[in-house]
Length: 86
Image 1: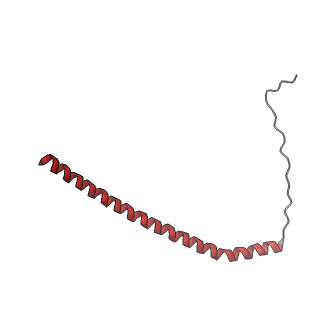
Image 2: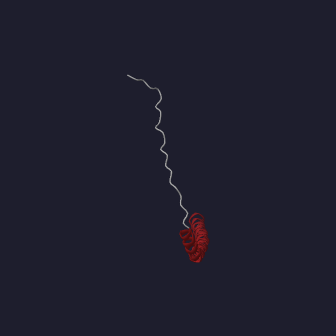
Image 3: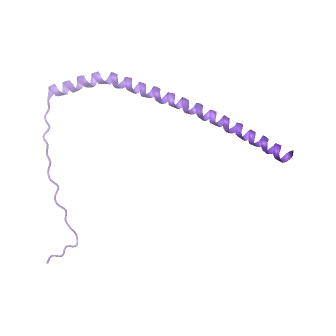
């Protein structure tokens, strides 16, 4: 019976995939890329516009919630004043 302290791993297989150059395919990919770029740029502008509008709405609601918080604090202080001093 063989006792082995450390197991040796199997050798990694050799996976060679030859690369072929196809000039027509490269030209077609370049044309497709050139025509898709304006559409992608337009999409990016649209996304940026949406992000900006969300940020504006978020800051407006944050300002409004701060105002309402201060109003509630003033009302609570006025009620406490009325209850304890009258």
